[in-house]
Image (cartoon, rainbow, N blue to C red):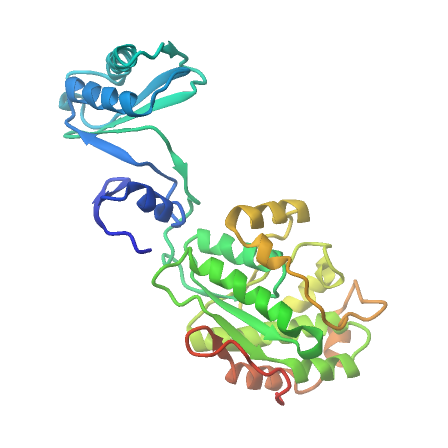
Length: 364
């Protein structure tokens, strides 16, 4: 992240010793497993030292309005001859006196203060801070085995990938190029959202994998009418499964949500999932579109996902909404799985190893 810091691991805490605490906090709150981050000053674990630290913070940041002091003390009872209530009472007096000496009229509000002073007192040291910047929470990335993330260039799929990353799951982003039915605009959107996801995974390879599936998709569009979108979805899952095998991934994640599209009815989702042996994770299955869009805005992928994209319509005029597995298997091309493996074998990487321009018209 370009932040020079020395990291010290404590119980339930990571301490970053740095000359740029704001930049360090910005990096920390984009890190999975981090609940919150705070620029803090360190003091000795004594009431006098803590009060001195609070007074310094008050002189630097308290310009009037209401304030409160919230203290938390951890460790054996014998470690400190004082309680958290003692810290709050004595610390509040220190802030009050510092404000008055600076010509500021102090006012206390312990329920909803304009400025809250926090104290985290450990056995042998204490920290004084004024803000808690929320992080994503979840689990540290890499504590689970990876999955392939099918990215479409839309709003939903990067949010779904992010949700699994939040649970410690590394992702292998995969975009299936759909030829005339996808277009370079969709590809650009998938690439942009992947770059944002990569910011949550420093040091990991989160470059977008590109599968040149245009010719195979065109053949499906020409030969399959009823159940076409289910067949397309099954083909994409088979490509993703082959890519997963190459990358040691143990599943697939998609942005599918029940009823959002014709291919995402419960019946069609069941038939699509039957195409592969790997589990298909759908973290957005019951999430409304408006909530998905809000999540996309929160994690920083919404704007890239809504860039205008022009492409041909792939869905038929009357799409199947209650597909049956036997019917779909009868309609789909006999060599669908083989073509999926052939496409997966020609996956390229968008990023450092390519110039970002990949042809869609090669035979798969």
